[in-house]
Image 1 (tube, helix red, strand yellow):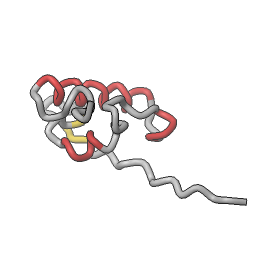
Image 2: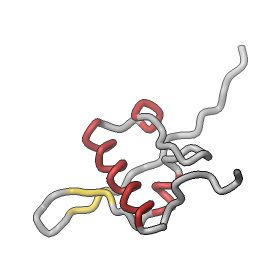
Image 3: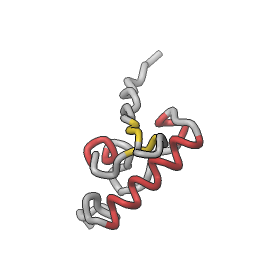
Length: 78
């Protein structure tokens, strides 16, 4: 049988805000970029091994980074 080498999912560093809530910082572009496909889509929860709450926080962080032009919306190779 052939084995496929699957890279481990990227780790997420949560930060705690002033009110005690945890969040994922949108300025961590390298960690967020590893959660995207080469075409710019987000990877699934199953592939990233995230909970639903973590996936929502990652989605919000990616959307904020895209709005501030820290991450691309799509692949620029087209």
